[in-house]
Amino acid sequence: MFIKEYRVFMPLTLEEYNIAQLYGVAEASKNETGGGEGVEILKNEPFADKSFLDGHFTSGQYTYKIYHLQKKVPAFIRLIAPEGLLEFHEESWNAYPYSKTVLSNPYMKENYTLSIESLHVADRGRQENVHRLPPEIWNSVEVVPIDIVNYPISHSDYKSKEDPSLFRSKKTGRGPIKGRKWWKKTEPIMTCYKLVKCEFKWFGLQTVMEINIQDFERRIFTVFHRQLFCWMDEWYGLSMEEIRRLENRTMKELGRQIKTGEIRGTVG
Image (cartoon, rainbow, N blue to C red):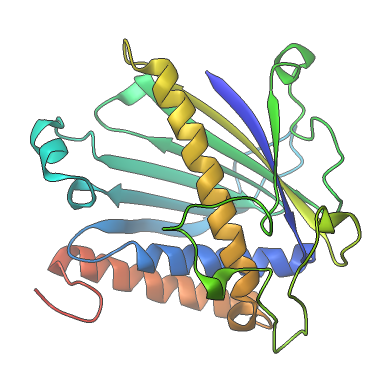
């Protein structure tokens, strides 16, 4: 099992990030769905019977999603992939500022596990072992800082309108963000401490797949948080009630697109 802790620096308050993240997840789900494929949200409801981090977080919002990926991979992979291999189930417990997400696969069952535990803290990323791992495990964890401004991303992921070094918010006047190690002097500032554990038990592929999964998560964290900052004028000022209404609309719309096979903006 590979374990890494990613530290994402964000020029937001904790309260702002809570709204931004929920808005961003809804938008990302819409962007990934169409043509009968993508994200299917089955549950989005409060929970109050689960305990995290020694009981510090016991209630919040629970979501259950299925990611349908059959048409999002090359045709030759679809031909050889066993049934269930290209479908992933996600359970998430959001007890902000803590959250936990677990992904599973119907085909691989206990041979595939991916969990992401996130703790959001109003600091500059200097705390060690915020997830309270036993010392013998924490000593083997690789810490990976993610700079949303200067961290390199691929050409295919880059969009100038989602570049924090270019963006300036009309609502808040924040941005653009410049300079190396900008998080050491920027206000407001916070850190997302994301502990990612992955295990892929498949003879001959385990190590390379676990490395690829961690690299994929690092890419997703980088791109998503760049978007969150540059989408500021879309989510800034929204209330939690407005976010919940947005989530409910998104849940219904994604379900309809999955069932009808609609591609966004067209039918067929």
